[in-house]
Length: 492
Image (cartoon, rainbow, N blue to C red; front, side, top):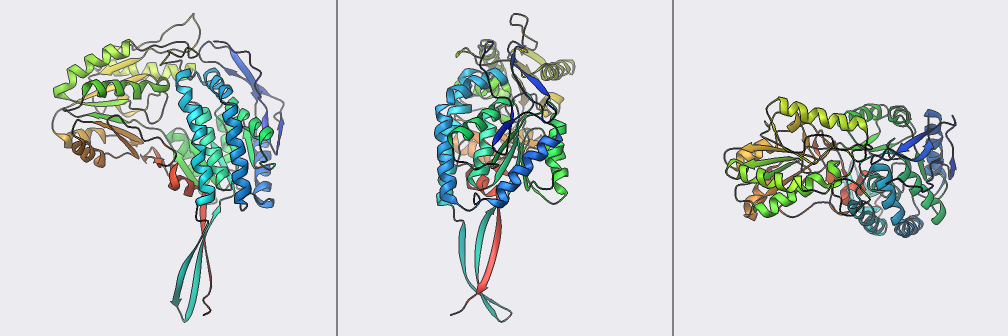
């Protein structure tokens, strides 16, 4: 599982790769075998400030924000170069994040192809729109609505899907004419550096438009970025606690913030669900990416009439899931990102059992040659809807099963009993019934039966503490733009 690839690990600031001003570096650890994948520059506040300066200069002194044809050409170049480098990014996702290789086709290849949508919007978006004349206070005025980029975007990404979330923010920020400072998660800085390398070598993107920062301490670099008044928009994916801190920092100077903050997504199995499909999907949509996904179906809400059969099916399916070496194409569940996260998963499951829940399968650490961070694919049944494990995001291969008794109103109530509201799922043979439930679930995305929301043209955002604002679609494009209205005399 150890790799020997020589990855770029320096900061990319103002069009050049450089070491941190302190000269410090830190190791990126492969979670599967604890080998050192690479060492990377360990940025401090002064490096973050330099990256913001470069982005600010590019935003203020180039025509990047207004030259739509040039911008689209650059991003088409970037897409082509990323497509060529896709095998490297797939390998890197497994090395630094432990992503099972079978998942990297979605995380890498599909996301590169999805750039078509936002690159296309550069040419089709109504950057200016004229309104008819309006009379007020003795004046007749024409009005023109104009969309303009915010300027400098501070993009902060998580470790669970580094290439995917990096590309979403970089490609969307650049397509809308902004410049960007991308701060990657400490565990997974290499994908961002490789994106910068591809952009530097294969595109005409101007100096300072794209900058990338890696830091061993997310708080130090994050505070430096989010308290810098020269950053106009913060786009963050991560935990609610950090999102709240970013929003507080952004409130100083009234900067725009878009937050995607995780979830505890309910998967509602109505009594008429097709159990072959529902249980297979339920397992797949919980255990994908080793359970380390914000919109995964981690909380199964099952009607009492089918509960015992569903739990038996889950036990059989989850206990048979292939886990282990993430470079093996047959592996579904790979390693956990780090020891601290593994301990957190252990604690949540152990406390659930102490509170009366039942581990059906899994429920403990695993071992692969004495190395790496492993947790067995797990089903925890008989969970109270208000229990910690039913309310807190586990971010690991753990499926929580909750029994409900009653009608569809009760199913909706239990599903909505959460501070989160990122995604939800509903299973029923009756499509009208499923739609009725879906319409009442408090979540930014809902998936009926064998369907999934993720696509470049559909907005993705959350209710409650799952976030503020959206990614993707025209609404996500709009998040990176501010409106200006210009009035002029209506002279007949």
